[in-house]
Image 1 (cartoon, rainbow, N blue to C red):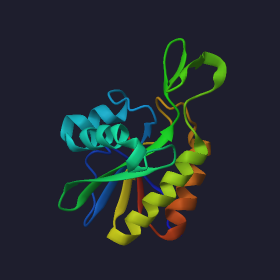
Image 2 (image 1 turned 30 degrees about the vertical axis):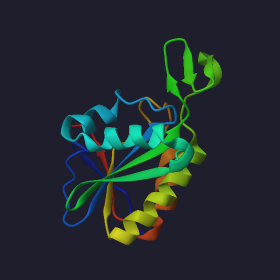
Image 3 (image 1 turned 90 degrees about the horizontal axis):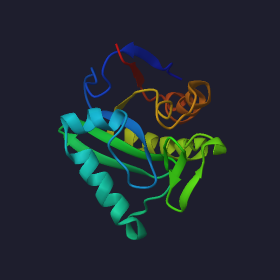
Image 4 (image 1 turned 60 degrees about the vertical axis):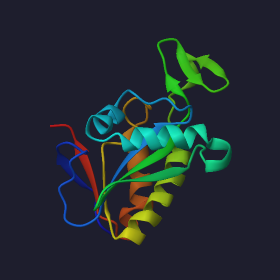
Length: 170
């Protein structure tokens, strides 16, 4: 088993040889525009475009909580859009497909969905012989805690020998 490597820096600029996957958590209502996805969109249009297409075609595309989408950016670089967040947090509560839940209904993160998406990511990373790079997924706007997310990353990725780098903003 490999340990998670923690470094200071921008997760959109992974420093590694060979194939690399940038992983992040997205919501299940098709919203894109806040948090880490802004940094992705500043560098490439493909992750947002493909996420919106995936969401729009959800009846046929397999889009759901726990699902993942791999988007190729460059010769040795992909982004993994992982649906691990139920709705989005607003000032008054959680906005979800079915309406708005009260603010005290808990954070949008769905740990089991993150776990499932990470296992799917591990399959892609193994097939591509890729390292995985990420911010502390699910711990920003999704409202998760790293002490709950880290074991999921270890279980799905590092326990399988996949080099995993967590980038903390410098």
